[in-house]
Amino acid sequence: MTLSRKKFIFVSSPSDPPPIVCEIRRRILFHEVDVMAVVWFGNYCKLIDEAASRLSHVTGLTFDEFKRAGIMAPVKHMNIDYKLPLTMGEEVRVRAAMIWSDALRINIEFTMIKEDGRTAAVAHMIQLLMDAHSQLPIFVEPPLFEAFRGRWRRGEIESLS
Image (cartoon, rainbow, N blue to C red; front, side, top):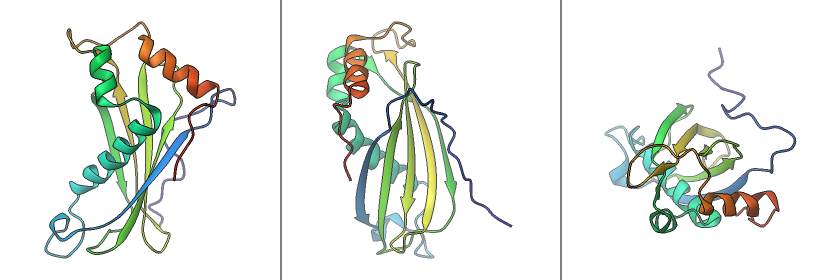
């Protein structure tokens, strides 16, 4: 029996620019584990948030930039597929990859990699662009997002590891 999922949820076309990728590395701390010294399931969201935060700085889509533009990007959907436990003291790499979408949303795939190279978890997250004042979805591309996607299409955003 296999519990591995081979593909992520987001589908790309050949004309889409490549994903923007970054990676964080850090050790699992005592306060992140349960009595079995295994990362408590809710702390996987914390690891995802840390990688997403780094990715926001790589892309320039930070909370400050969204705020200045009057935009919000709340999480609309998130899914985590747990494969192997992360344990106290273990170093984990969390890879975040922003996947192109023609829609006004942000698609990110995450892979958590154990010290030995095995995959601990995979996840995906969808953030929906919304007007900060009305708190309703945006249907016309805001200048901040239009400029970002233009830089992405031209290959001006460099992935980091």
